[in-house]
Length: 221
Image (cartoon, rainbow, N blue to C red; front, side, top):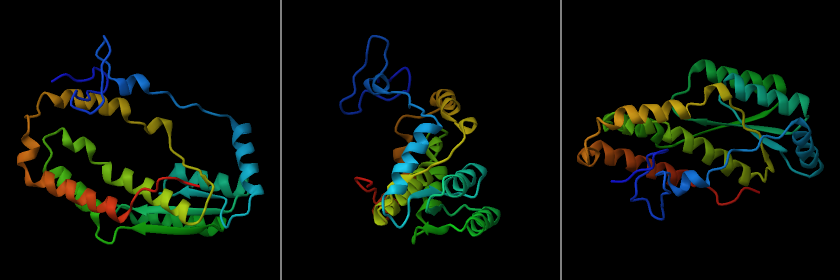
């Protein structure tokens, strides 16, 4: 089976094409994000503050240094009306919860935490690990990634919040590490082995339940 030399996406993906170097059409269409300076950010903040909303922005909060700094920046530096949103991925530490509650109390920010009623995130991770043949395990972050995006976007739509300020660290990006790891373990994968493991179907089933419980909105206003 032919695969992209860059992202190893297979030729079975609908609509995929490859160039003479074996790079797929999705990789060819990828564009690096454009980073804007402080002046552009201040302009966006100024426009948001002119509008009438219960909240000017949402800050996704995890209790770590990056999101806590963005919370401080939004509230103290830019003077925005902030709603902090946490997705409880069922693996939070007590210290992380304390950090979030204290930061919001000190800054005077409203705080909401959203958790699955079925505890699907932990189940997704569990069955991902059990069905792993050292390749599928690389998707273990799927539950948290989708959960955070969905709950934040849905909350923004629910409260008509015009801006989301999301903080992360460039030093913690793992794209290249994962790409290298996939190349290392790809040789160990047995074709169709995951389909013979009942945990694979449990993994996909609980991810489906997560999507049904937290549907991704089509548009954020």
